[in-house]
Length: 317
Image 1 (cartoon, rainbow, N blue to C red):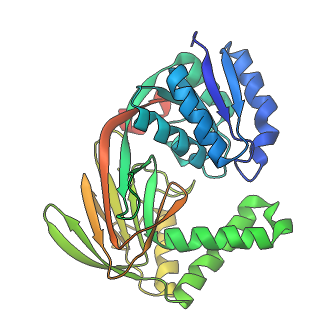
Image 2 (cartoon, helix red, strand yellow; image 1 turned 90 degrees about the vertical axis):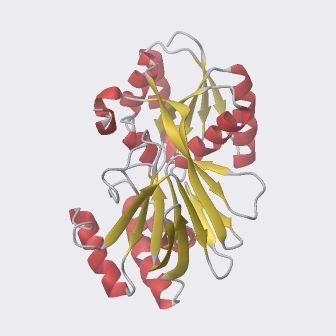
């Protein structure tokens, strides 16, 4: 990598942990002799502003932050249609995309940027019926528990600031509480219709996720065959009508026996449409959207060039 890159650094990623990794990140970039100009974001609106500027000036833009940071940069690259390449330095709490492309460690990311090997990845497209512009997502879009638990965890972590310092333990505790609370309040299971080219299926499920990656929430592989280069999205439908059923399904997911035991159904396609009897919410790459009850989800095949670590890509072999 000889040309100067735009390094967009989000110090608030990972609940502020990213800022403590800045020195290590810059030291790694310098050790690899990568020329860069760093842009430090102050807010999400400022991140959008910086990304828009960078798209018009820098062929290679590296996002240093979490999944949300990368998604915001990708939005600007795709909307401006300048053909920029996205680099990834993962400093967030989940980092699913970075894990999928083999750069979830800072050293691996910097070496990959130096080599400059990129692959055009598929991009998910979400249309809510409420927002005029489509939302592009790199990882997943989910209904039901994906929305409810994300919101519950954010509120819980805000209330328990001392426990939140032990981030992964606290997040796990909060997530369990969110699962139970969602069933208790009967916000799940959802009753929706799923439309494909082959027809419409009625679903009664607490968790429906459309994933572009095989890695979900750091440690899970809901659809082990999911690939960001096959032009398809994997729709994973959890079969768990009660909380005890859900706990049992979660054990099978952890053991990777959820598909053969029918705890989860997987449908692979290019296009899906969700019909709900009332307005519902959907989460895409960490952002929650209101919808009018009709949701379109599709793919843009090979739409975004992303710098990868080729040796770590199981879907490239």
